[in-house]
Amino acid sequence: MSLGVDAVALAASYHTVRAATPFHPSRRMVDARHAAFYLPVREEAWRGKRLVPASPSWMDGDDSYGEAASALRAAGLPVYAWTVLTHSSRLGDANPDVVVRNAFGDLYPYALCPSHDDVVEYARTLVSEVLELGRPDGIVLEACGPLGFFHGGHHEKTDGADWSAVQQKLLSLCFCSACVERYDDPDGLRAAVRAGIDSGAAGVEEALGDQAAHVREVRTELSRSLRRELVGLIRSSSPSTRIAAHATADPWGTGPFATVAGGVDADVDVLTMTCWPGVDASVPAIRALRAEADVRTAAYVLALPPKPADGDELLKEWLAYAEAGVQEFHLYHAGLASAQRLDALRHAVTGIKTALPPTP
Image 1 (spheres, helix red, strand yellow):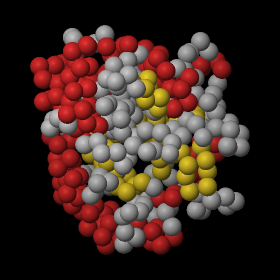
Image 2 (cartoon, rainbow, N blue to C red):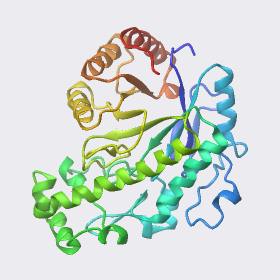
Image 3 (cartoon, rainbow, N blue to C red):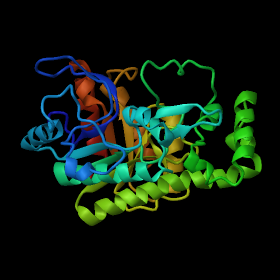
């Protein structure tokens, strides 16, 4: 409450993570060894489903989300259910036929491909259970579309690889059995992608040639379709729940911020875009997103290292985003910040709330 935030995003469905807990009463680290559902995994809801989330064995009880949500609401804070959808190493390892497969045949076990009906059904059931059991004030949809090369697994040793941004995007194009059926010439496309990666193509469209427009439509439609499905579900079953969707304007985006290129096609309340790279990269990306989608925009801002623990510097950056058209700010991640950094955040939050109208 002392930070001045208006709501808290609380993990309801989340991927594997090792996280610091500097303010926990009894520990300083949590090792979430696999993707998990932090609400009860009810047999009656998941019976007959192929993809079923696991409960977190590292937590006490089967409803840690509910316990934390109650504490937050008791403190006067609305709770948004942070719901990670197509990112689950545990389910991908167990079901390799429904994960993203690149043009070389390499599997991305953390990336469930929404070309598959089982993946869409899994996402629908996740969202339904979050709404029914969690009763959130809002819901955050992360990875509401196909993941790719970026945003991978444990002990990453690809970050330092000399892959360009274009090569990473080409490595993110999926050739799983369901995606292959969507392409006009999958063999030709696979060959073009491989050649583009190995030659260091200057752009995705250049590498794909005549197939670029069709492949772009296939990829962007996967995100639009899943977004329509889940947002429609939320609106019909819980109309008052506010919906935030992680988003990018880049049609070839590789991470958990699903593309909205070609249209949002869903009644979301806010699109949240990552602004971690800093002002020079983020301001053009904000303008691109706002040009692509006439929806309220939030900046997802990094409140952790390497950002300085300097409230004036943070506020200066945030004001640049506000000038570019951002209407609200989502902080990552106050729960991991030091006391000094929290002081800087408090200063920046106070300043940006003075500059912006209240969040609806």
